[in-house]
Image 1 (cartoon, rainbow over the protein chains, first blue to last red):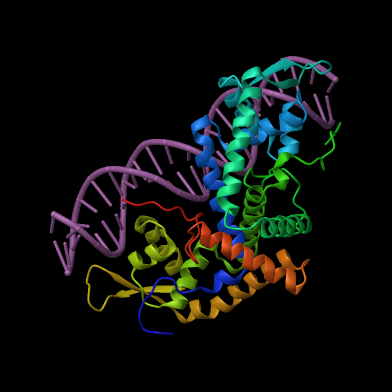
Image 2: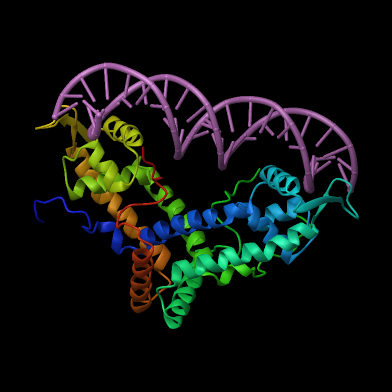
Length: 163
Length: 163
DNA sequence: TATTGTTATACTCTATAACTATA
DNA sequence: TATAGTTATAGAGTATAACAATA
């Protein structure tokens, strides 16, 4: 190794998928946060909205399970969404302890804009790959995610944490 | 968990490289943290050690630049490493303001064990792929990282932050 | 005047426990 | 006795500013 301290030297880390995944993964999350900010949205709020788009009217506990967050944390997330008038807490039909969380009209209108932000991020990250390579990448990533036992749609950044 | 809506439904997120990268990336980081814990090491401490293995005797400012962290934060990292006797602050040969951070014998002995932890994580994450697929994945990831302007060896989780 | 290292402080996030009202 | 939701608090992690010594 030369005596000069050049940047651009490769560290041992750069040949490892594990490091590259972590590095790019954090970058992707940070960029998504940036892109959602103009919409007044945080990725974890987007996650809740997406889950409700899948099945509207879920209880907070159901949402917490689906996203692998603690019910305590879900309180704050629903609070935020409700403050922005994106969801409403409605009485649950059969369990008076629970709330049915429903998307409002405002929330439904916001979702496609958030989707667009996600699409643009996807283009930003994979724009350098042709269609074949991009498809290859996604296929490989899904295999890795499945092997790791990661639940589709749930994100380890929303910390798991049980009683 | 009682009355369950079943997981395993696909959300819109699962077909996006951006989400998969973020999801797997956080998982990878969490698993690496786990694997380093028995060594009394945190990933960001490992990052500093690795950087020193590349060029020993760097100043805190140089380390901070290489890893894209603020020099304020580097103080604490070097503190921790010094408490574990993995590095030493030595007087700098030409600049009396600065310290030359050097690996101790203990630190040098620890490094290969940390490398082993990284190797094992690599196997854990990519063990389901054959050699060809694994190589494909790494090639694609390096392309994405380069396109995103990510510096080899620096990690966005160590927040960038300048004066 | 600028830079290296340091300290102190404020701010955000997350984890945990404890409480209520229902079941 | 267990569960849904809530609240309060402590802890970790990060950001910011300001300071002393040296360049």
